Amino acid sequence: MQQAIFDWNRGISGPATDSPPADAMDRSAWKGEYLEFGRYARGVKVVDETLRDGLQSVSGVNPPVSYKIDLLHAMAKVGVNVVSVGLPAAGPRHAEDCFLLCREIRDAKLPLQPTGAARTVVGDVEGIARASERAGIPIEVYSFIGSSPIRHSVEGWGLDFLISCVQNATRAAVSCGLSFCLVTEDTTRSHPEVLRTLFRAAIDAGARRLCLCDTTGHVTPYGVEELIRFTRRELVELGTPEVELDWHAHNDRGLSVATALWAASNGVHRVHGTGLGVGERVGNTSLELLVENLGLIDARPRVPARDLIEYCELASRALSVPIPPDHPIAGARFREEQRAPQPYRTLSPEPMIRRERLVPMTLRIGGSEVELAVHPRRTLLEALRYDLDMIGTKQGCDKGDCGACTVIVNGEAVLSCLTLALDADGADVQTVETLAGAPHLDPLVDCFDQVGGGQCGFCTPGMLMSATALLDKNPCPTREEIKVAVSGNLCRCTGYGRIFDAIELAAKIRRGEAPSFALPGTECAPPPLPSNTKKPREQRG
Image (cartoon, rainbow, N blue to C red):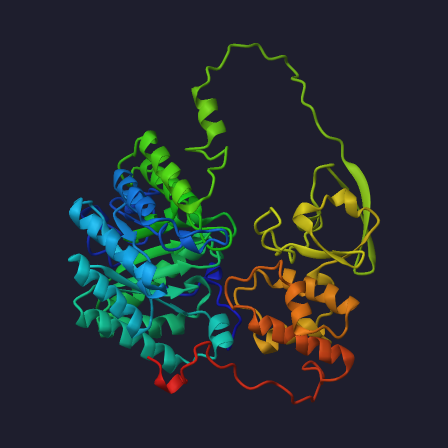
């Protein structure tokens, strides 16, 4: 692994291609120059992933199929073109729901193209083929595989293994007469050489669509443009400029709607979203906001507000997620403000504005005393991240569910999103930044790295702090005690087995019962990580 990530926000050298998108009349003048924002977004199609990514929310539920069918009709009313009907290989109920949704699309003649999610595993693709045959309509295969160096290191995947998986899955779909789209997970942090190899393998095997993913909400609009230009250059070099592109993004940094609009303006053919933006971690691109904004930039026809509101209400019912009061389309408070008449009133030259006074406080962080002033309602999380710029502590759910914000206050692990900053006045606070760094790494940090206890890394700071609090109190914990200690920290990527292993090993190193990986000259690195599947690698694919 040459780099932990490849940052597309920093770009790569090379001119933009002069080859236009192959399908749209008003895109024929595309030269990589954006004289009018949204001009090259005209005709872009919208993919609704609510019934796939929306169900992967940490608080998500798999609703009755009748709720899903009602949502299908609402999708059609707001102009959705393509809908994911789920991952049939996830289980018998998912397979049956996939069939029933496709049958409804067929019988009700809904203007929706169904897609099915699949790993790059032949059995998953065959599950979509069976649903397609039962329903009597074609289902596009969206087959995903991790493409970033982080994922490859954790899983122990080599490039030959990835190529084999992509080729076998693509050929399986083509042999069943189904259109195939290769979904490269974490594309925005993947190395160009790996992407080039995977794209070529899929297209040579018959793929006619690529989906570029910002799986961790990492990219900026500049990175979007750079990645799309790179991909178009590769397609021209392969002699397949007709291959279409999708854009799929998550909202970890609040940029998903902006990056989706920018991707559309750079000429991708489809952009993805979910109802109310519900999805993994902090969510996906909000589909209703995406549709509304595409209408505002004249890329698609405007959708009546009543239809968008109905869509939001049915998505809320299906996902068991309430609509926020300030949602800019369907929020109750927002709608009330829109309906309420605005009374005429004369404002005084200097209107009275009630301001909360800042309260001085002191924290001891990593042995240093820090003075600051905060509003009385400021949380410890906000004070650390936004006042002290200590961004290692993550802001996840903001309601005490995910544990990503865990810090240690006076020796106790606390959720900083639920702790007022003033409650920590005069306290000793430990964050992930206070753990020892190179060259003498804290054993927990070193073991998480060596054993493979992290993937996207979002939950890792909270995990480390919960584990630190445990080992400071109990140097010799049992595995059950470790499980209890991190039970409030949610991980959506790796599963918890390697996390428990890392904490157990760190405890042994602390007690002097195992050598440290970080000691110079110590040769105790663990063997390469096995695959998470039970099959031997040579039998997979």
